[in-house]
Length: 423
Image 1 (cartoon, rainbow, N blue to C red):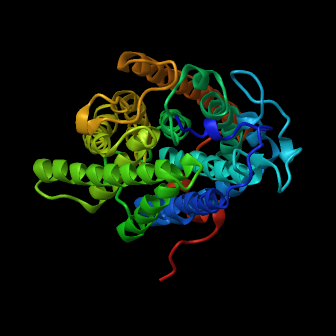
Image 2 (cartoon, rainbow, N blue to C red; image 1 turned 90 degrees about the vertical axis):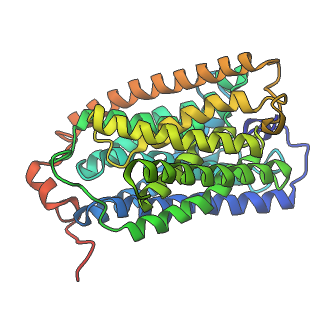
């Protein structure tokens, strides 16, 4: 089994630095940062109304900066320093004891830390889609900072830092639990606590610039090669297969979503194609190091179908204004992919076979049991802590949400005294 955890044992650096692996993870770090800046910023920015586009861009940039500094100060140590099953220690605060020659596996530890930092950047940024167009900027900053340290970093330790889920043999190659479930659940909780945008389901709230959204979606697709391929932590066959299955699943997700729309509504939409692509990407992420191309086809197809109907159900039946569909796409996709990793990692499925179960697990039922525990624990912990943090932050800033007048006029002017367009 090759996971992030398997390659990052501190102190066991009898290996020499591998130049090829180092070059690939340097490249992957840039690709994953590209996913947030400008990929996610453009993707989300185009989906909101023109009066709120700058607020989305500002939130993405600000979270990137805050998350990066916090990852250096404390987050990396909580996630990856030696500790107990639930949290790392404080031995890596401010990269204590780490220099240019310190190795993590056969790459510099400072590079491993940087690569993981880009994951820590995009995860809280994904949550923006749940509260878009209505949350105070001060609340966004405080919530994102606390959430990174109290939700993201501990769960990262559980899964990739030698914690209790890693000990059980959870399969999460690149972030089904750590990134997608945590962000999706936090976005759903935030949307429920804030309530819907003014006019939700009463008037049309349409994307203002689909060209911007498609541009951002393209950057996400390319950047995801570093996200999943880089998680092999080497320039090798594991990385190559992870990139291949990522691309296949994204393609299947896009085609599936478009086909459903074509059948139901008579025409496929551009928004549907790019959303289906993201659903395929989110679904394959946890499985990308453990399945083959056949499994990727099945996972992408399932992601397109299930995430489509989850989006409809949450918006129309539950009337929850998860504004940019973070939970039904990322959260549901992450849950689905984490569970299906336990299926398509089997070596006994013919053309749909993967590369085997975790050490000590001998059958599909055993791997699925571990995957289910990982999903349930991540979901429950994230929901509880996110809700508590929202209540604390709301008290600190005297309400999470901008006033009705400010919401109507738009966050660009109210929060930043700027306009996205002066035409």
